[in-house]
Length: 399
Ligand SMILES: *Cc1c(COP(=O)(O)O)cnc(C)c1O
Image (cartoon, rainbow, N blue to C red; front, side, top):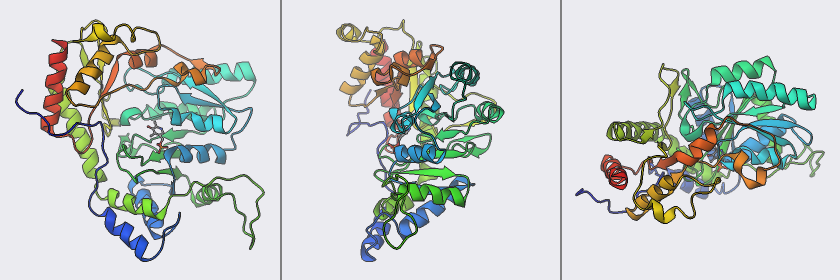
């Protein structure tokens, strides 16, 4: 292999359009250096146009957005909320912030997202065991892949349970022609540094109408009532997006489509180059035209039987039930030495020590994916040569 990248190849680095600085300067020049202002309003408007329905509130993070969605649904102590287990902790932590109980539901093999069959079983079983239905369902579009929203929404409607979509990784992904995050009552976006677009840190809540938007903003600004002095009858939060961050967001909106197109092209190239490599499977969207993933991160699974160079060195520490398979960890280290960042698939929430006490409905899929899965670089700075270089290294490592 003759090509060697000059710099380390990361999973997904922030990439600026060049317009961000102009909006930030405008905020400075007009002294809108506060958590509200013209950039916030304009960013919200352009997000609303992009998602194509409902209203959007810009907030300080994706986690805060999820927290306020659950708050507006009235969730609190004694309530249960169904959460996809195969995800990042930010999907379930807000349930716990509110004193409610997360109920973890496993994934299906094709999308890696919430299994609709298991979801319905869990709903019925919770009703039987507690006498109440769960108060919300949180499916996650993991690595950008849409969950089976038609099936999930049908179940949610049957039992009249509101859906909060965690679309933090899925900005630009569509399902059945519609933006992911616009199927449920609420949809959550994240603009953290490594997501599809960034505001350095930030998030947004897609909500159904202006009235609910105002409710979200009320909770996001310390639940201040309409009095000339500070009057509070409820507990709120300080979750509004800064006008500086929103300036970055306005600039980022001009490159969002390019980012999405880039991630899809990178996915296609990995699929092509890894085709026929024994024991390595690229995670792809199901066929049939419903799915249109943004492919935020490209993810692969390794057959447990394939041997990766150096795997005996990691065998000692990586053979335990709560660890990825040895060949996955060995490949991660091999790539790391080649100056390529890769990352194990999310460790399911039901396997996290901190969540040990919560109810779970599992089928083994997320645990299997955690043990076999590895995420590969796909961000705006990853070139076609980089992808070829990464694939060459994977082939070398397993030869
Ligand atoms: C990033 C992420 C979040 C949280 O977003 P922040 O903006 O980092 O708070 C939530 N859910 C998933 C699945 C994520 O990847």
